[in-house]
Length: 82
Image (cartoon, rainbow, N blue to C red; front, side, top):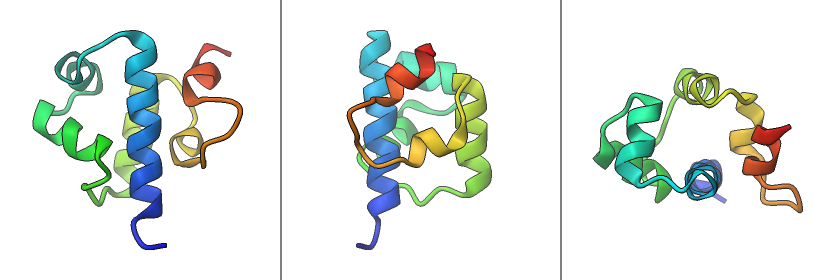
């Protein structure tokens, strides 16, 4: 399905943000992006490069593949804690 990876990325970022109890603006600051860009990422509206996915993952201290994984029993937030 077209745009599926964008939606997965957004859902995983939202899950991580909510787990940390951060607003979109605060989470955007952590990631070094603008708050409106953060909203677009979470909604799956941004067509990001692989380099951007790597950069976001690096700033979160997780592997880039975690941000693109389909929802499972293990959330991205749980992966970040391990």
